Image (cartoon, rainbow, N blue to C red; front, side):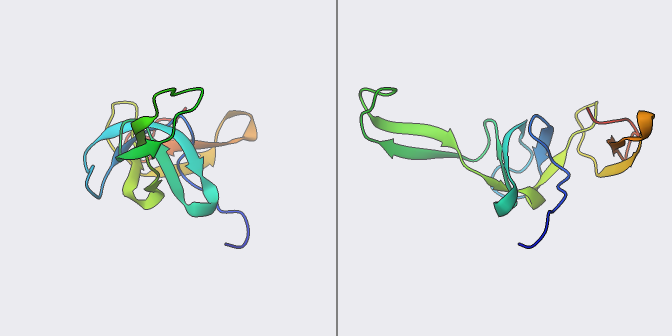
Length: 108
């Protein structure tokens, strides 16, 4: 990718999965992988990872963890928990803020 891409999803956002095996599930964004256009959502897209014993997991074994999802399969939730499109407008103090297009409320 060339240049900086502005994504509509940030770390800490509450999102709904709108496509794929986990369609309809809701969760909080733990991490956004900008270069890959993917995000890791808490409790969604769980995969089993086989690990060798280490200090954190002395027994090793199989660990369940979240795998990244394509950002196009996620939609930000408005204040009421419903999926919404995200817009950007000038807020107070001449600063760009994100807002929910359904309710016109700012997304914090």
